[in-house]
Length: 305
Image 1 (spheres, rainbow, N blue to C red):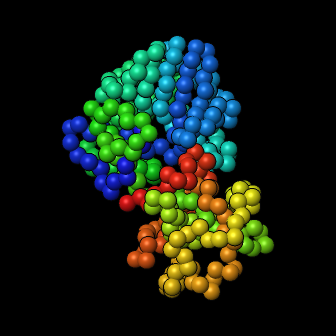
Image 2 (cartoon, rainbow, N blue to C red):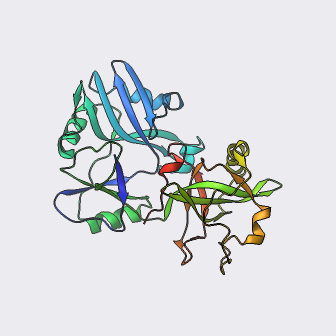
Image 3 (cartoon, rainbow, N blue to C red):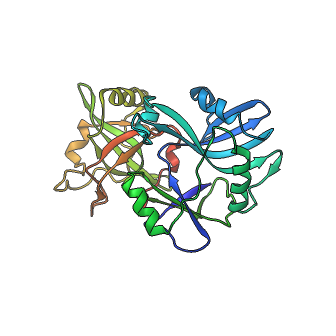
């Protein structure tokens, strides 16, 4: 079950609020002594996180399916998506926030409050971290989360059932920094691999150009991304709205005369990008690379509003 982007936290007695953790959404399946971890697109990632797998083995249930987030904690004790992706984390932890199956019982049709209560009992006395509802009013919660520099808040209706595979309006996510996933459709070659990458988002089956990304790369992340792009080369531009007829004052557009200098790739790599705002021409302003999102399918990437 996925949350729908929103611009403000909803208010009402049926709403509860959790930290939006800056990590990888992960399902944990326990079957007897065996535990397996699955990414959002159901890729088995168990082998990549042995310490988390061992911790989840402490669950007080013979069989269970838990929903949660893999989060990297840096040396300052703060969640860090970059540390998780580059495996430079001081420690990787798992925040559990939902329980879908317990001992052979399907809990997805039970209200969230009931699932949370059973999850709390299943992790009590273990090393598993619980992503608990935050106390206070929405305004107080937003102020505190902003002050801590965390990514945002997820608001959930306490009565909500678990709608697997859906982006439901019963769960809303509010980001306090402007970041979202985009698909890479091309790049401008340079001696070190690329000068910038061109990113976009899907509307239906059509890929729309959103902007160039030049900032935010380290030598490691540049090399890593280039290794992923190289085998995806193609001759034609995958963006339906390029070339654009003009380049703005900020240089976000791609004019017809720019096209020959660009290399195109099959749009399958998903990256997370930070930016300051959308321009009037629907391009990203001051975009910076954050990291690869191997847990999200390219076709699921939409413009968040």
